[in-house]
Length: 302
Image (cartoon, rainbow, N blue to C red; front, side, top):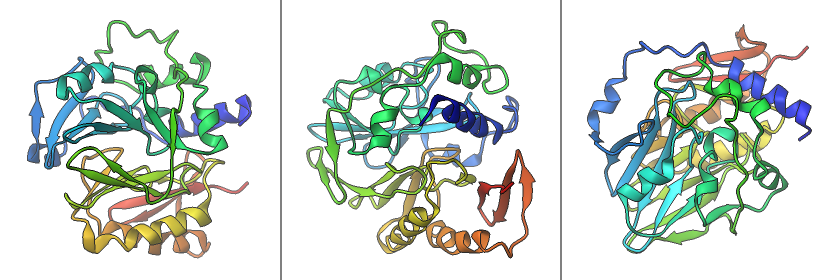
């Protein structure tokens, strides 16, 4: 993606948020999970069932979640957040087994900590390779501004130098691949649409599906140039078929859980939004189609 277009895309993403509300009440969903006294001062850590941890960034407007999935011999970090804090430090305090990183996709808010890990898995795609080059401060400074964050920021973070550092993908993954962590297996499901390299992780034994940005309970961003709506539709229909074997979704934004029954609802909703026959509102030059439990944001044609 050319730099000018990338800047436009990041601007659109930032514009999709209202200013960060530092006094917003916390969802009661968080009370369901034990909050651990493990932090780098930026990340919050919640213990989930099945030797899984949710690593949350609540003081940035994206409200990102990364997930540490621990087996007997290895652990998998599903996304590494914005790189504002030191996710590698938190991970080392949670497990002493070797850790590999796999990204739900390579948008900037999911790869910020990749540079700190020696083993990074990824999709074999031009989009992933481009993302691995990082993002400069000129594009990323807004993400740590007072409009997008709540204090305190880490002492070693400077708005004038904050960037997404380059990282190296050390091996690639394929659809249906089973990653054996030792006594625990997770399955890679390629789900392109939101981005060309989007994927989900299925943990059959614990009946949970890690969905990244393919689904989360909020405004689904389907307006940037790298989004393929036809591919997204196919991916959602595929995921909807997993409802009988999944009890909970683990999204990458807003909340650490969502109802799997949302998946077929999104698959049904997208054609309605694309039909041109459904009412919408316009926000930050996006068309917003509101549904029960989520909204779909599409580009507003000029």
